[in-house]
Amino acid sequence: MFRSFSQLKSPVLTVIRSGWFTSDYEITDGTYTYARLTYKGFLWQSAVAETSEATWTLRFEGYFPRKVVVCNKEDKKVASIDTGWLKNRTVLTLNGGNRLFFVRESFWNPTYFWEDIKRGKILTINGEHFSKKVADIHIHDKVISNPLIPLLSLLALHMVLVKRRRHVAAA
Image (tube, rainbow, N blue to C red; front, top):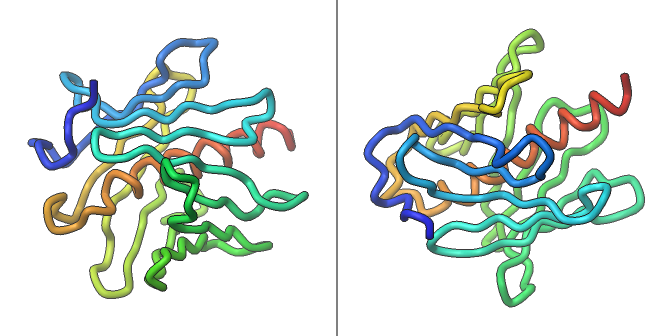
């Protein structure tokens, strides 16, 4: 169903919405589909992120949802995301204690990137508006040397979509 990220030939992937009235998003290179993000519930309380290697569940935690918990198929916590209050960085904390940062490049540009203190930029996501094409993902790190690329690409997509929905709701 999905092609493995290790078989990726191009460092640029495109995120498309499956339909105008669905909440399914696919990460593709134009030929093959590498991952899918599907939202459940009327208010997008949870999401299912699928790749050929794994399946994760993303759930908001708390009354004012600023934390996201990432669980695997067995419902064991793999990571947590903390957006914080009035912060420009979102922190992803993995079970091993490793921390990654999701940062917006500029106030004027809807470009975000995942950054590791040791490796630098891992991947960048550029948002698109009013199009079936939702975003472009540029992978800066080697997929084979970093097994987190599938999860990070889906989490980046999730963070961009949630920020968009919050901006629309606030307008």
